Length: 353
Image (cartoon, rainbow, N blue to C red; front, side, top):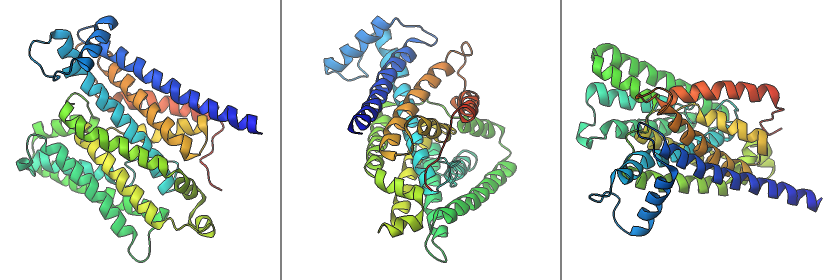
């Protein structure tokens, strides 16, 4: 029995190490492709030189290879990895919080809140005083406000539970969608509508090191926090009644997890626009491989999400020559067929009773 447990543990560690190695390989591959193709040797030398030089990244006369790697491609790839990591873990958490295998970071209305904030900013000019990134900031405020609204409504007439959270999210999502459509209908702004459409499809092209310095610690710390909560997340799959018999009240934990997840999604929306589907597909695929234990599920999902979006971002820049395909379109085209295939071929269980 001890030998079986040891082999299972070694298999889990092997998967994590393999994903880390795959992430590094994917980063170097994505750095080498694009309008200007770069040899891997040049990329490696540029990366090592910058890391050990002690000089600022945006130095003068550092050479074209340095500028392409450190100012254009690497920031967007780091953002892609962070977005994939954050959305995948948020998908795991949302599915446990509402005890619904179809949940993802947007099912509780967070997506609609972000969309409403961005639509109001683009077409009505709300938040222009916040600076050049006012659209992303407005989307972040909308996403976070929506999560607070879901919590408030789900706690009316008694304490919230997974069903009330889900229903509150669906109701508020419909309201936000209606308001967004109302603004678009009366704004009569073709340029603004095109901006909204492009923003809704997601892009990592606007990544900057200053933004990553804020988003990176938030996503990493949130993922580590959720990893420490694996026991509570496992209890959520059993349901509130089973948890109470074990002496644990899940009410406060459910609300804290929802707020932290909304914080991640809000910053992701701020930096990259709407990037959906990752939080739904990745947790399901990883659950087929490592089971439903969140102690294993969270780190493996985080690494898989990072690898998935880094590779997807690289493909977006080379599929159509001299044109960048929106990341949301490619993710849906790749993810949906793979997800259907895995669901057909694999024996799958969500967990719980």
